[in-house]
Amino acid sequence: MAYIQYGRKLIQSSDRVLHHPLLFAAQGVRYRKLEVILTTTIDKLGKAGETVKVAPGYFRNHLMPKLLAVPNIDKFAHLISEQRKIYEPKEVEEVKVVKKTDEDHMKEYHTAAKRLDNAKLVLRRFGSGENELRSPVTKDELVAEVARQLFVRIEPENLQLPAPLTSLGEFELPLRLPKSIPLPPGKVQWTLNVKIRRNSLAILAQLYVLNSVIRRNCHKNTVPNRPLFLTSMAATTDNVTVAADVTGHYLTISEAVEAAPINRNIRYFINVKPGVYQENVRIPEDKTYIALIGSGADNTKITANLSMLHDVKGNNFLLQDIIFENSAGLGSIVGQAVALSSTSEYSVYYKTTILGYQDTLYAWEGRQFYRDCNIYGSVDFIFGDAIAVFQNCNLYARLPDTVFTAQSWDSMSSTSGYVMQNRSFTNSPELKLSLPNAKSIWDVRGENLQP
Image (cartoon, rainbow, N blue to C red; front, side):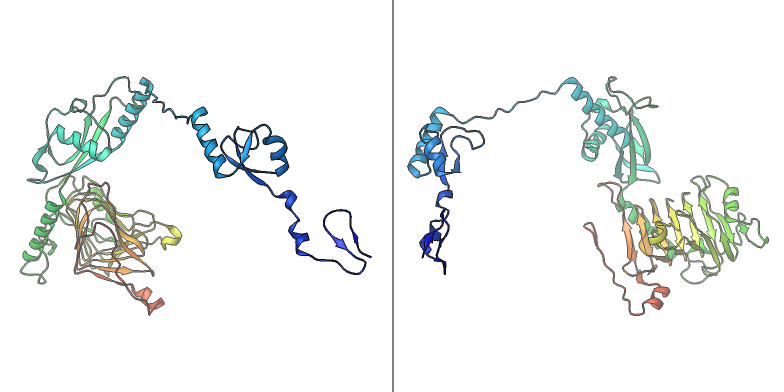
């Protein structure tokens, strides 16, 4: 005997269940929703003109009698859109222009003044002599460079410059700004720092001439092709000797440098006898024309264990036949470990070995010349903003995937760089022993490379 269960889901018999497609197609008709268009904004349902889905009973009993919604067909959709144009015009968003107050202007002025005071304006100019400029730098040029480099607009009357700048160097120029701009603590007035450097084309030309002089002026009694200023120092009365065995004038190189005269314009030679010197050598700015001559790159070594070693600042510095080493260790363990840092102008390094791992040689700034040098490192081990020429130099990688150079610019107007002439990029002996199949690949990258 078949019977219908109270409800809508099943038709059952005592021995089987009847399955019919129409029974299952009818399921859910009660829950199927209708798409309608709202004529009025209704909370929790939608805004006027929107299409929403509602239950048929809700639309029939509540929305349709009050004309709150109409079926979603083309005829009603067009009708609703036209009614909205008439009764609910489209809202136009008003853009409010907020006028800047005097306080806002003062904040901008103060920010610009701080930028001028903290930044350094760098200019490149051609020189006619050692420090003289071929053409002076005028106030209008400085104002234009401030706008280009620092993105700050000033007027010529804001810059106090009695006369144009006619020489290379660094200058601190006073600024005439409104007194209402508060000065930083300890400042008497606002200033602009200007640094005028020699144009790189002229610098490279001078280095080329210097190289020609080195190769042409050879001493008759010395090894062929040895530069004149690297010959024997026996005839020089200014020689002093450093020896760790108490056979010289000084026991340490630092003592000899400290005793050297200041601000010389002729060479002062310091001869270093064979040995290992555990010290950090520093050449101050006032110790000019110092020549540090060793007894062979295999016999004389200066070593220490610090993050920054052997800082050379005195101009016209000369270094020959000495090993400079930073024994701090791997860069992955100790980080930066500079073996030689140089800001010396017209400095020359001849037959010098520089040993380190990360950041071995910091060619900071100035014009520098390296000849027949061996430089060892692992990560960016030649870096800095100097204009340097490396001639007949060997660069040794001490770890796989080594980055040899990382020349850095101090501003977008900087034109410094490195010149590699007859160079050699290869693996160090310890790397060849640990990885005999390793290959040295010279990978040159950068947007500003020149052939």
